[in-house]
Length: 348
Image 1 (cartoon, one colour):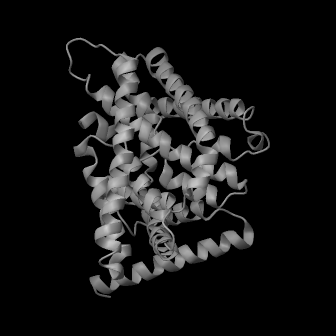
Image 2 (cartoon, helix red, strand yellow; image 1 turned 180 degrees about the vertical axis):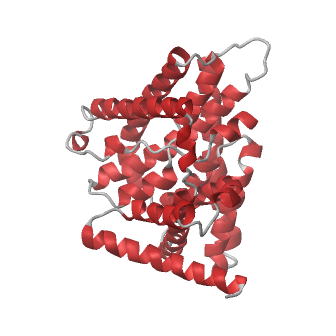
């Protein structure tokens, strides 16, 4: 089979696998995310159909595309009423989870493993980056109340954005002769970045409404996706956060009346990206990485600390939100994100 035909056939197989996985979940209740990852492991490290090393350089790009698509879809599907009703809960849960995970990660790296203060702070911020591209998909398929599902999705976007803002604020101290960390300055800078991101999302929504939707309705869906991609890519150059900006853009245009077809188009497109993303994660599995006992010990310690911090934060949150008292899913959402990887941050 020629190369082009092979790619087309693989695309068709990928779509079929995604649909079958979704149907399998509906019939059995078994989450298809792990099945897709196992499929990636099977065709990657086990069978050797795909060489993981050859696709490893694509990790940042594919991770960003998956993040963009999922966050944009979540913004499109969030109503003003849901945001108003859940804003306090999202901020409260997000603040507690971020603070406990940040403190626990810093303590382990600095006190237990002897990392320098700045390096430990920077890595702790990176590890607070949630994974909206994974969490939004997982909670959609889990048994939990609609309110907690919405809170979990919004909290993931907030945590990811906050982690990136804090991490890049700390990066400004790298290489400085004297380290002067002022929490007030970091908090002020984070607030400015957040407001700027929301403002950019609102401006782009207006641009889409007047120039794309009004004048070229035939291409309104692709126009919205093009603006979202540009906004995600250019936000950093403008001092904003791409995740929050794209989420805000999707939120503003999604609350227009009569945009059901746009949501359907984006959901189907995100479904394809989502299926490929999880199979791709499985392809990247490298058993030889577990041979480094030092890295393995640090990783296990941090994973355990983050999981415990999440459990404590959700437990405290349950005093304010009764629905969280009987729910076990919310405390298990400890997935970390791909947007702010350690390699990217330390290279900057």
